[in-house]
Image (cartoon, rainbow, N blue to C red; front, side):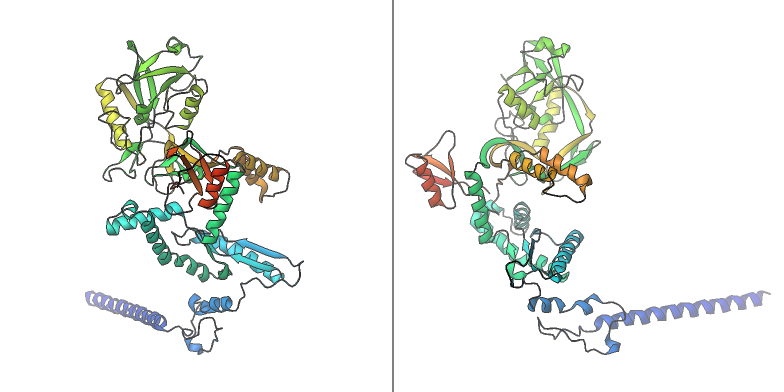
Length: 544
């Protein structure tokens, strides 16, 4: 029996070995086949660019399954060379025209699946209208992507050469950006061709082309002259990483449902900072050191710029303190008034006392205007605590200062506690930096009138939105809550605002006087016509 069992086992082992050998042989054969297929040359490599290919290969050389390269090779070049994508000349005045402009992708990136989808839809529309005999033009183009491009190129220069844009100077840095654009901008064009987009490349544009820059200048001057564009000092969104203002739509709202530590640009790369907490501290009432007001804030570092503490008129607990002052714990001699503001303070919410920092919070800014409060900016453009802050906080990065202030308040027995707090924080969509509200002089577009006309067009049926639900409501809600649009950016890469500051006898006017013109000569003529007197110097500001 033992001998029989051994023989059976040997036979089974031999069978298994044979099976494994056969599998390995088949695998090797398949690998060799794949290698042979890959090693086959493109049969159309010798077709001159722009000529129609002729498929004259042997059957055994044809791919055994669909091969995109084999099928698609040389077709696009022939279509383009044959002028299939060009608008045909109109045969009569009544002939219909269909023209669309590609939503220009940013020069900084590569196309993704979303671009492939939307461009395919546009392509289908163009092909459909061509087949109906219309004159069709699909205009290609690429966006210069001011913020993103400047950031990418500057990062590259810092990494490779150890220099930033200020080391180069404006003109030299712009030359570097153009070099980068020429090197990397062609990738998008190649991708659009690769998916067969029927674009007329003779009409290709770049948003910094001279023709488009001229159009931007023309639009700005006209809007300035009609009163749609204006300059003002307002609270705006500031990116400390890029040192520039950004618009509301460039701010991402990131939720922090619970405390979380993250890294912050411009700060120590080896450190993380906790967000999603609310800190409680005390202000002592001037002359009554035994009485304290409890303050709750998610941005305790901004207390260095506080210029008021607000309470509600119906809050009986705090009525005795109306019109009194609290002492700032770190700034000798600064007395902060206790004011009544029923818009900012909710009776049944929080501690009943709200610190007011008009220069670094939108709600506080509106409160500051209502009560004519001092607006103290406490941050530098790159996010450090400025000279208006006392030692030891001066010069610290803003979120390092947050930690330091809590420690100093604890030493003075003025810190109560820190709690988890469900909150939303504004993040710069370009850099991931925490957006800082800052008071800056900027250029704005009046949006109210345009928004009202846009809403009316939908309500009257002049403009139809598909599908109606829920997008009509979204449109109307958006148009009903529009603030004036900040259009200026403190960048070097981009369109320069055609605005000139007027100086008389070497001195700026109070308030500032600006003129806009298509060129310096036109601006000078406007300046003289406005009777600003003898203009010794008219300096073009370095705004984008």
